[in-house]
Image 1 (cartoon, rainbow, N blue to C red):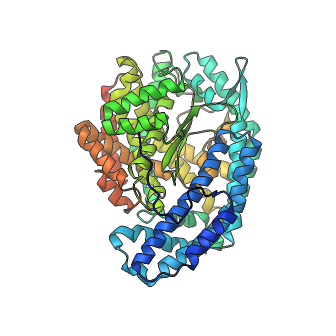
Image 2: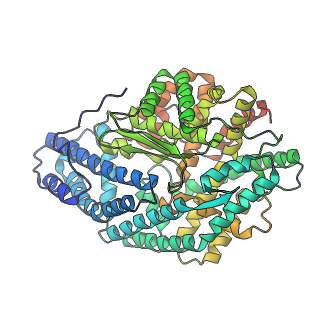
Length: 574
């Protein structure tokens, strides 16, 4: 069991209701008005501000968790909306004033730069980019993102006489009956098309607002603004293009070879969209667990075998920490799509959300989100919430994706030997698909936001051109509208613009860690945990280095990494 972490300061009342701005205003104003005589006083201000920020962050996180778990609950939605409208805008304004006070104070130069360099760098950037006129725009964008989740969470279909959520429909794509797969695919596709206009309308509004935030901040387009706002100090737009080119060079040909093998094994001239997940030998779909609790119990055994420390951390998640529930895993009507891990920043307790339906992808999601939770737990002793909660996403995803790969050795907790090999192969083949998809989504967003006046027809044409570049070996005849709208399925495009390339960069890092693990498991896990314990206290390349990894996604590095994946694939039966 995990012990509660003592509060970093006693400035913030333990019983504070941080959902009400009137409770927060005097505390933030007190920090803003506080005299700072020397560097020690500045350090205390940073700690007190951190504890207050953590309390507010946790309050918002709890409201968002409740909203995503119950998108059909009017009270949950209203409470989250009230926070977004009444607390977040006030917080942004006064946080800007506090940032200015901190970075502009003479004592800032006297702080230990090894300790505070990343924090000060990020605060200075926040001051540079802040525009008060963007606060209401950002509030409106948050509300639009909530609307997207409500629409997506409410989508169900009737299939085989039952109402089913769209995540629940995914398992039918693994059925050996091709007619059933096609029926399930078309049922879901038609349901999504019913929302096509709503999603496009929603996105057009988002696009306009995002472009305006960029103009307000002095940028020509939202892409350049977003890259700066996401603190991408260690790579550029050109590097993102290089990533896409590296994937196109090394991974796309491998994906197309695998698809050609799949078509041949299935006796097909061309693959259709419903042929991409079925077992090529006609075996029944992998069913790794019966219930969510069964999945959790088996996952716990995986982590116990992988590393005693990780097993103990997962056990704490399973049991709940300090009376707080840490898992909500089943798919149900009214629940937002997807999966995530959120940290309750003041208690420093993670929460994992997903939509489990009994397929192998659920196992991967479970261990993925557990990796995020390990990250939160391993750095929970860090006093500054900025270093716990603002870790570079490119490294956060290393924490999660690495667990998807290192758990390969222990898939016998879910399967017999033959099925375990199937699961391993499916996962690696899935990486051959996801890396081109990441490149597609990232390049699509580059195009969208550097062409802000585009029409919907232009947008569809740009999307289709990217699919031709990175896929182009699946027959979508008669499903052209579905293909042109596939990006609607990627919630990041709506809710977290430009948060996607991070998955690609991290996947390359995770593949490196997996290679290290296959050579020396104990050393790889030791380095993994060492990197995670740093939180966000060091620049991105140093976090990679601490975990024993290269921060490099050049063509030679991607080729070398991908060749290692293909070598393992060659050892796994079809």
